[in-house]
Length: 230
Image (spheres, rainbow, N blue to C red):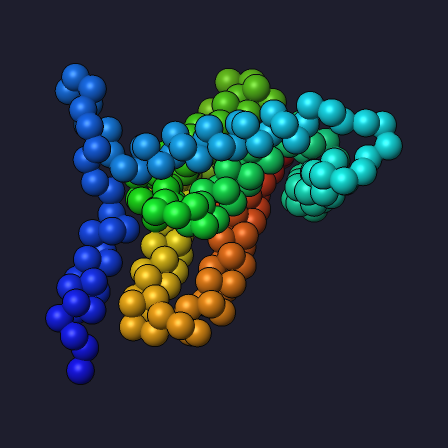
């Protein structure tokens, strides 16, 4: 039988993972998710500044790791779009790194990953699709961009529009569901079996966070390829 303390902790798991109001700026309520996002962005900006300010022609140390990561993202783009798709490296690479850091931010004491909040993943999904549409317009021109909604026949126009509207929901729900579920299970195991069992689950969580960033990036590349190529 569980003690009253453990039962209370289990009851508070969901509330711990959901966003809470922190303070208010005029009519805008700033939630814990927004504050956590600001903290992670600040840490990420500082890390990027110090890691990239002394690049050398002959890579070594951290620069070697960063170039390996860069080549990994380039390889994803090459597989999905060909080498010409590397023009979208800043977009795909930034999303991959940001989502990966978000997913692994639970290593910061007291931090709840922003990707366990559907509002964060929805914002990422909507922003990604808007950028994809902008890239398609830039590549094809507005006339050809609008024409592709009627391809292969005008009768499919409503279905093609619905398909584009569904994409951000697909990106958002997939990322949110996996990250929220994984963190929920980890927190429950920490309460029930606090000694040994959570350790392999934490390691699995690191792998899951990386996989989810990879999947989001691959879907982004696939949508970019569909939007910008004939």
